[in-house]
Length: 156
Length: 179
Image (tube, rainbow over all chains, first blue to last red; front, side, top):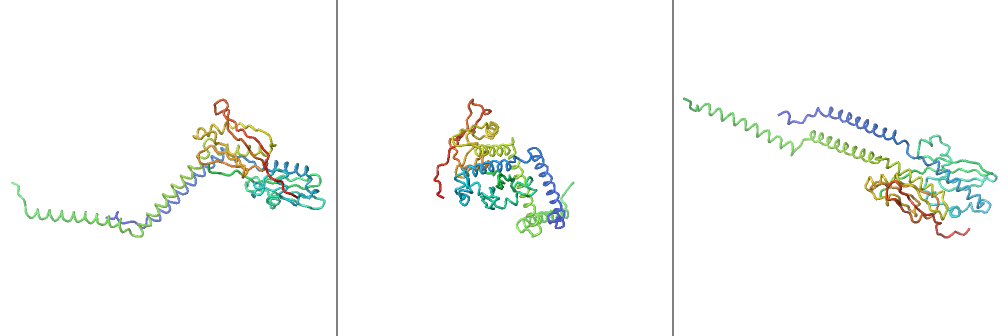
């Protein structure tokens, strides 16, 4: 009749076995993820292209419309309209367009101002949540344009 | 000549009675254990249930992850969503653009998805969505404020290897705010 009695002392052994199984699962998962990562790589890195294209669009638009001299820089909506840029996308927390006229220190920006700091971090390439940026000084204007946009999974 | 010994018979009945008693006790204890489980046994049972639940959950997640990478579906969705958004960002109003999306069409058809549904454009939120699997896809934003009109996927020769995504760029209709 002993087999009918539940053995309390078996709890310790059972608990230890659980961790063994858990460790095995972690090892299997690590192997699968590592294999997939090794095969497919880091994915398709696009932040640099995104910021490059955005920089060129904004730079050409500023030059074409002479934003600072015409007083357009105070009106962000006008920037979006004149440059055919989407306010929804540029103010989604993944972009920055920053321009500064060096002569008088006048600034204009749309998006996340803190990207100015994050653009200087060394972890940018490894951490996909950080922006990759274009930082240039052209004809008396300082430019910082960055993007940290990544693809989103959606349900269809 | 054999005959029944009364003493043996009584002895036999007594033995049988004791064995029946043992069996009855076994059955009683078993039922009692199941109906009125003690705390320690209950604890072990819950441990095993939690373990089984975690085990199933783990393998479901792993299965989901692996099927996501089937045929490189996730990678190609990501790639085309970003490339098409780049084309839109570089485009000018009035352009008509055709992109070869044969890779997507092959995977989509293999997954039982219609090639007509693999790419969609959201003009309200400025997003390109690519999906070659049923129920899931990848989306990426384009920052040029254009309307993308007449988006369609075409297979000119009837084969999936020449599939093209064609769309037109049109200037967005709106009022310019006054300075």
